Amino acid sequence: MPVADEGPPVSARTRRLLHLFLLVFAITGVAHLELFPFSGFRLFSELRPAERVSWQLRAVDEAGVEIAIRLGDLPLGYRTTTVQLQGFAGLPARERDAICRAWAQPLREGGTEVVVVRVYEVVRSVRPDAPPSEPRLVYECGRRG
Image 1: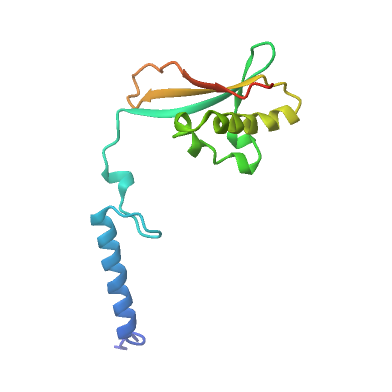
Image 2: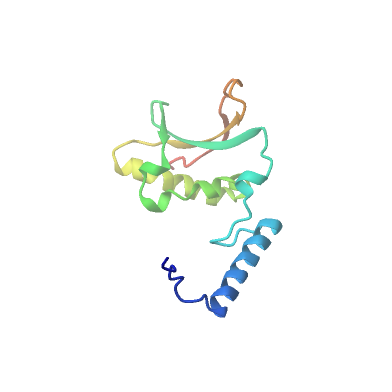
C-alpha cells in the first residue's frame, strides 16, 4: 500500500507565527479589544439597551413642508456626518448652523428651497411588539438670513 506524501514539515517560524496569532486572538477576545483584524466579539457578547436612539434630518421649505434628508443620497462627503449628531447639542450654535447649512446646500442646489433644517431624535424599543415613538425635535437650524 503506498504511503501518502505529507509534504514538507511545518517550519518553526510558521509555528511561532501561528502561536502568536492565536495568543493575540485570545487576548483581544478576553480583553474586549477591537484591533483589526482581531475582534473582542462585542457584537455578540455585550448587553444592549432596551432602546435605540437614531436621528432624522428634515429640510423645511417655505410652505412648511418637511422633506427627509437622506445622507446616503447626498455626496460622499456628507454621509459620515451622523457621527457629529452624537454630540450635536454640545457644539457651539455657529458650528451647528454651519453643519445644517452644509446638509441643506445639496438640496438647495437641486432646486429645493430650504428655510430650516430640523434634527429629530427617534427612540425605538428593541421589542418587536412595542409601538414606535414619535420623533422629538432636538434642534432647528440653518435659517437663511
